[in-house]
Length: 262
Image (cartoon, rainbow, N blue to C red; front, side, top):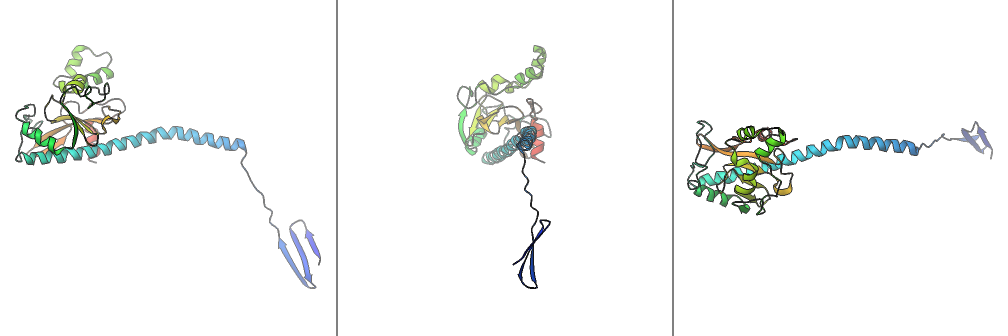
């Protein structure tokens, strides 16, 4: 047997006279990253992640709040619609007639007693606080701001006269009213309904879509809503005081409502 090597590329051997087999050897090279290259790559990945993750997390939280808002809206819509049916198909307990601007008797506790009873029967309520909601466990203490504190936070130099004008006709949405005076429902799923009034069925209200989980901020998980009349129908929408109010980074109740319907 004869072997032939040429230029380190071919190896040939003769099996028998006149028969030659040739095998081609490929020139194989193996590549590897250096430690420096690996560290640089990881550094770039870290920088990109640091830049994009906060935005992704923020977007995710907003989508969660939006879905919770939709769920709570569906809950109250069904419960209040059933309650209207239970009291005979007509009630004077609404915020206002959207066509005439005439206010309903929602502030009349006696006139709305039957409707309140129906609402409390149809909502799946885990706990009711008729007063001092923060002290009695319906709301987290020192978490919920009112229109008055929103105004002072956004305008540190606001005068007492300007503050009074800004909250005129909206006393049910002050920090003290929300935490110490108003009726509050905590639903079985943890969502919270804060009535505008003391010990009266929520007609004008604040919705905390995820309850005490937080952040308990206007425009994040806390939104204004009202039960109103439209012809012979009863509906929900953000109307009246507080519909354009929100804390830094949040959105108004009007905008959340529009997003839900888009």
